[in-house]
Image (cartoon, rainbow, N blue to C red; front, side, top):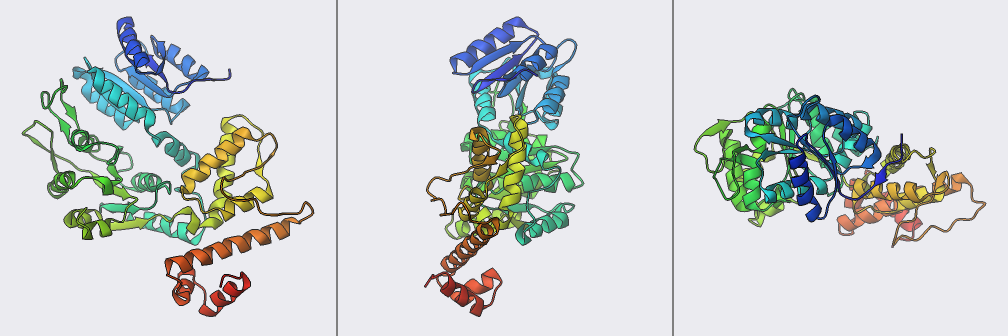
Length: 448
């Protein structure tokens, strides 16, 4: 296969009508995007194999291989690439079916320029693909890790997957909340249905409302056709309300009514449509505290917090770092067609000593950068702000590993003491060790 030519934010337009390709190309070029065009699916696949395409916009109805078949081929080739479908009103049901097969969104023809630019911007900026790639690449594993904390997550997912209860997933940014939600959906009785994700933090109220509930023709300026919302698209499957803690109080009130009635009414509409949807919400905020501060509705909190999963930050299960790091090394060496690489022992020490405020996502970015820049089989990693541990060239691997273990242990004790306001008994209980042991360790590491 030819080496791909990499161009940032390169969009592929696929349409058998030359005029439509030309209109879209001019619009997207003027908005600052690089554009490729194809008159059909065969030409489109050749371009995808040759160029780094960030997004594909394809007409749904085309002679020969249609947009739906092209979508399937694109997802087989590069499951991370978002695909936007162009469709006439008469084929809206097929467009909805395409979304259930993995299309990012669809736009009705004739389209409004601002609408399609908005959808394109969302698709380009979304990082759903990277997380999806990680999910697929892990061969069905929810997350990588065999620590006690991760094992508890697996057990919880097993227990609640088949329930129809609403789930609240909490955890810091980058811990993998969407992966957990996808795994719950995959293992549930609705696993063959659609999985629809809505980022509640990314959109202002007016746009979020139309995204969730849909709208009727004429509901607002630019609504030249009716469009179902994400709740309707998720019918028979699961909807993830990502970062629900950032939703305004007004939108919380409207969402609460939908959760209570299991009915949704489009903007500008009068008919209510019944929805059969599994609700999963995620947040990186302390919603219970937000309730006390009157920033989140308590009745909505009770509605979404039927089943709860907390994803631990990476610093709380550092013993999983070697497995996660080696997974990403294998993933990116395969992607870039490089020889299989490993991590130099002193670099692994760095990975274990760092607290990873960006969690697994930050670790992934660090490994990807190291793989791309490395010239040797043993990857050297330097983390900004973290000094390299002093090592002698003659130091044995055993000594290096012992030093690493001590550093991790010391850091864990320091974190526990900080979280327990210096109370050694509470810190010992949090770490699962005796008070005498923590006192001895504090003395051993001169932490007094």
